[in-house]
Image (cartoon, rainbow, N blue to C red; front, side, top):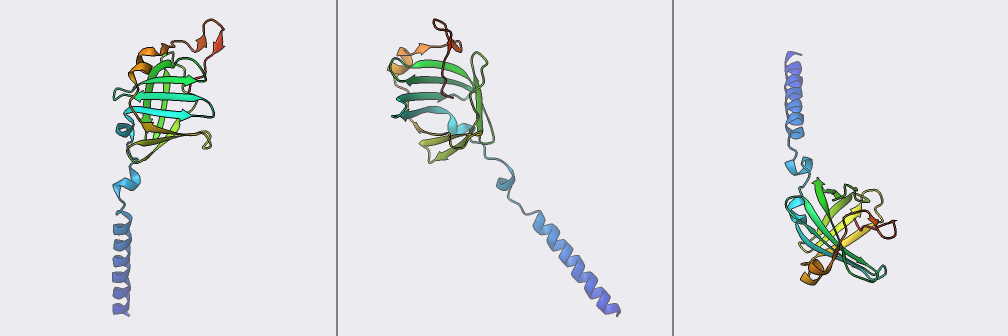
Length: 160
């Protein structure tokens, strides 16, 4: 009887030790979110033939961005502001303190493709290619500093 109890106690101690050991063996990668902020830095280009949209965005390492958008006819409009990443969620605001229309889950397909998917509506997804912003767009854009078209008092559509 005594040896039976000692065996059961020994097995219980070994079993408890194994459970404790295995529960502490999680990879740090499973717990820590991947920091995608360094990957997002640079120039990105999006086009949509259906909307006649030509969008360039530059994310810099200080948390500022420049957005150049042309929807339909005319010149590109330039918007500026700040961005931030929390885990893989990108959010930001324009220089007039207007928040972006959505925050975006960011994924990458290799080094040259970035996919932004709206956190509120996963059907809203945009694929950008890593591409330098041409000088003629940087130099020829119209900088917009307010959220309304001053002449018409109409709100401006902003891509992000």
